[in-house]
Amino acid sequence: MSLTPLLGLNGFGTANIPVLGLGALGTTLNLGIPAVSLLSPLKPNYEQLGPVYNGPGSLHERKPFTLVPLDFEQRGAIDRAKKFAMEESIKAALAKQTRQQQLLQTPANKKAQTLNLLSRIYVGSISYDLKEESIKVAFSPFGPIRSVTMSWDAATQKHKGFAFIEFEHPEAAHLAVDQMNNASLGGRQLKVGRPSNLPQADPLITELVTEYKLEKKIYIAGVHADLTEEDLKLVFEAFGKITCCKLPADPARPTKHRGFGYIEYESEQSANDAVASMNMFDLGGQFLRVGKAISPPEDQLSTSSTSTSTAVTAPAAAATTKVLPSGAENVKGRSPGSLSSASSLTSGVNTSLLNSLATTSEQDGQMASDALSWDRIEAQEAAAKAAVMNVEEDDGLLEHQENFHIRGRDARNVIMQKLIRPPPRGVMILRNMVGPEDCDDDLETEVKDECCNYGTVDRVVIYQELDEEGQLIIKIFVVFTDFEAVDRAIASLNGRYFAGRQVIAERYDTEKFESNDLTG
Image (cartoon, rainbow, N blue to C red; front, side):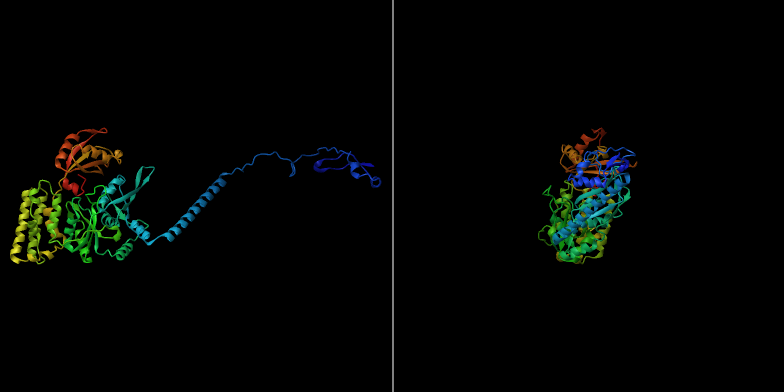
């Protein structure tokens, strides 16, 4: 046996370990003793000759699992990936929902969506000092408004200069686009049109009119609250026989209508003539807005049967006397026969009569600037009656008065201007009562409750406008049912203090208010 130095792993050198020769090993094996038993008492001693490193098989300290910290670019890439995944998920969900809706959508639902699109308009170039209430007041003469949506800038706390108006009926939106585009409001010209999702509305309107056969129907807005269906029907019978006339009732006031309605003629030509002549016609102190009907028949309420009128001017007189002052019993008491005889002309009337009526119309225009008295009104009616009686004596054609219709705007205006008078109401204006920051949904109710102490209040209108210095001011108009209530309210409210402001209460011109002129 000899001692042999050996070099171990990782720089360790072994000590002198006795190594058995083959002969001795063979001898040992021949003795029947296992070779392992000969090596077991040998314990090697290792000496470190260099640095020690942990290898893959070494023991590690057990620590909880932790994520590798990310740098700025990696975090940004993960955020972008999450955003992209969210957008794609939303797109896929919307596409799936759209496909399901298209599969389940019925023709009736498609028509309803079409009507909703036709009822929306875009209004741009709005003054930044105007609020939603001002926009609603400006567009309400065309029909009931369902909503006004304006986008607001969080930084400036002002709207972005445009709005979307949704009417309850597509006819109102169509008239608003035709008449309010380039109109002035708040010192700027409005830009009114269709939303971007409905750039061309005419093909849809034509399709609806053709499908539901609406060529003979017209839509009327701006109807005075005191006029009834019969009054309106008798006035519009000048253009042809009417088969349907309906003014939808106001749910809040069952005895009143909502200010708009539908009329159906027997012929399409009659409907076209009514639209051309009666649009922007002053009836009862309010301008009518007349256009062709668009809504399907199921959206129109059933109407009563029509009756033939003898003439257009007599029904117009009967209609407008509903808005005459309460002190005009002498005019109200006139018999219908006298009114009809003063206006029941035949189609053979000569031009000399029209010229004489036109002359009377010019006189009316001059007298309108003054405070018209009832004596002057009676004199005008007497002159018109005398002119008609001359024609009756000359031509003797009154037996055909049942078939007479006055055509054109001017001839009707001549007679209507003699009969239309301010309604029996008094209007009070309250200035410097509140500021723009104090306008809320409860202001109208508070003012009405306070003014009810002095008389019956018909309605309250809150109006905003710019003064000479460009500051936004608030005007409050209170409409009473009698003039005495206005005097009592002014005597009590003028000079009082409300929220630190001294209120200025004055009487407002009724004719200006009824014509929607609130700038006084």
